[in-house]
Image (cartoon, rainbow, N blue to C red):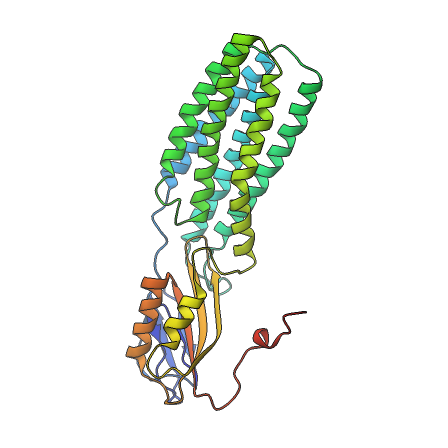
Amino acid sequence: MTTHSSDLHAHGSDDGRGHVHDHEHGHEHRVDGHGAGGAHHHHHHAPAPGHGRAFAIAVALNIAIVVVQVVFGVLAHSTALLADAGHNFSDVLGLLLAWGATWLAKRSPSARFTFGYGSSSILASLANAALLLFASGAIVAEAISRLLNPAPVAGFDVFVVAVAGVVVNGFSAWLFMRGNKDDLNIRGAFLHMAADAAISAAVAVSGLVILATGLVWIDPLMSLLVVAVVVYGTWGLLRDSVRMALAAVPPGVDTQRIHRYLTAQPGVADVHDLHVWALSTTESALSAHLVMPGGHPGDTVLDGIVQTLREQYAMHHATLQVDLGTSEHRCSLERRDPAQ
């Protein structure tokens, strides 16, 4: 006997009758051989409020500051400004990727993409991290070249342009403060902007130091410090993005706690094949087998379990299968030798 539950829905007991489920997004799925007759409604929750305006403003401001930094970086012979410009340009690309991912995440599921397009936000986060690391490598190469071959640097120009960068990037970071803790994709955009604001502040300081001391090597040295900060801040984003892309348990999800909750439910003798993975940077999915020797507990009971999983454990899409325990149902993943 199997029972599947999606979001706030659980199929009924096995009476051998097929039935059609009415989905809120307009797609109908026929399920044969399981569940009581009647119409059931799946509740597919809309994505979190978008940041369309924030992305548009941040992209426009960063394009403008990139142009200014490149022009003055060349005129002032400042690798720190050019480094900041390169980093800002990677941010523009990253913001465009993140913006596109938030748009795709809002699209309804299709016959081929039955979970929707939310996972594009995971790919965008991964690409963002890769872009930052690539830009950092280019900055290091240029800074080392300038350390070996020092050139005059216009400290005042560096200071003025860098201060403008602080204002632009600080404002852009503020636009993404809402939601950056709950959405890895938005967190990536926020980290880009916040890091840029700090980097621009460091470059401004280097401009003042050059004005006061005339030590031009301060400029490429500051570039290397900028890269160190960027790489340090990017590592967490890269790690979480790779894990999500590999269908690892999303950050902040305690599978042991979920297992204890399911095992403690009345009538449940065992829980196996518990799998949790990310559908997007904001939504998670769960599937599990509940061994219930006493038989199917009814739709109301499973609806309550699924609702608790959603509200208390952040499982936006849950699928539960009820087993009587009369045969071995464990999937091939659980039979694999861990040493292989």
